[in-house]
Length: 604
Image 1 (cartoon, one colour):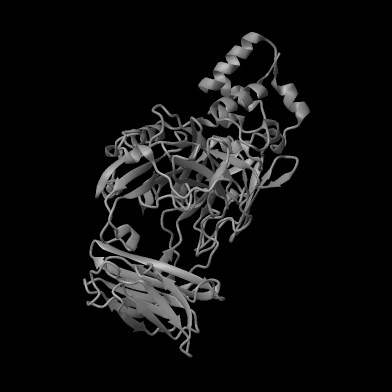
Image 2 (cartoon, helix red, strand yellow):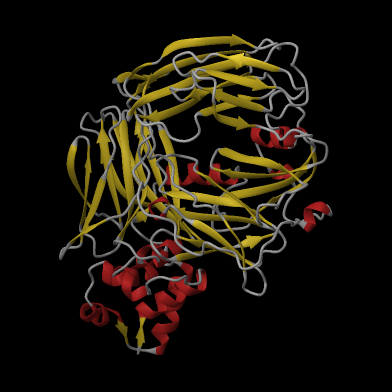
């Protein structure tokens, strides 16, 4: 006799090795499926059926789906057959877009229709589709009617190995269309969407899912191993803040990270776990293949869009890497010439810089560091990437030195996740509900050689309160760039500072910094610089003047306005290598009470 549950567990092991955490039986138990009923439902009688079942699971045939329906847990998703085949129009649209993206899924990936919801007015329809591609589970939202749009978000199949409720939230409060409600928040006139969608995957034992948001409590059925909650015509800032699953026997709280809004959102709880000390100290390191210009991975010509053109500016050598084939993302490592207009002197220095870039969805993000001293603070360079604030899974990406043999993520929940490293680069998808996390690097002898500071989820800080920000300061830089500083209330009783800057009609942007009622950190908090030499920020209430020290030893004085500073370097300093070395804050008695050092003088 054969236990098909064991066969499914073995298939999961084949696709993705287990990491520390509960075994498959625990996942089934969390789904509310009894041991007695599960064993009775999964006993099959002959070796011939064993072979057929194994083939069905691997090939995701209808027989595999039939077996999965007889089991508890997330087995329908492992077989790749939840719901019913997607409408042909949606399958064609997906296949076309997939074929034209360098971040696409394997050709022939089949969508499944899980659930459909219609607006009370009948003007819009929402389809919840899902698919499995290798070690990835994805939900795809398609809105038709008055608002036409589609979006998808994915979760790693390995997530089912972690402890948790029998529901995995994948998308939270994703807005579509434009509703009639609008209000000012700082420098933005914010509009509520026409609808907001929260969706996820469910285990077989889940009957319904209950969600709570600003509009009340809502219970939706679990259909085809998924759930779909649509908030039609939501209010501005409406956010889901609690989710629970109903298994028929119990109600189970579901961990998730609320979508950010006005500085809020994120998990906002927990602490990073894992080691806090290295066993072998490294002060140097390299990426051998990059320095030697070895053609690993793929050519950068594979990249598409405006981001790829920007990346190739000033490049000496670089390659596009795919360190985790289960994630629809790529990582590029380049050896590039320094940018003479970079805001930080170290990046304007002589010598090459190493740049790492993450590409996911329709976005990209990254940064550069000088080759000299690249790993002086440790062998890991890491960051987080979130293409959409409604995504429940965050990308953790970066690169390591040649000294690193193995990389592990320690999660706030106490378990770990192995992070594959390929050609020094890594990409991992981790549930935001498990943040903060810490990355720990091991050498070939198993010694800890590096660890990161805790990587945190987005949101959780202060943000804009309702109301329009008011202009306070304005400057014009020697090169003609302009900037305006505005202030408004924060949602934590403090102030928000906004800076709008214009380099040209093609180069413009804005920054925002919000604080709570109590001041935190240095008495002087300034940022900016860049090719325009415009600096901005805030100082503590007891700072009455700020002295600027330039690279050539010259000095200037700034008098804050209501605690705010917006300053353009004078023409006499424009274009010099080190425009500003230090900002020093003084109180009314002339005592220096805080400073921000930007570069170290050559002769202190």
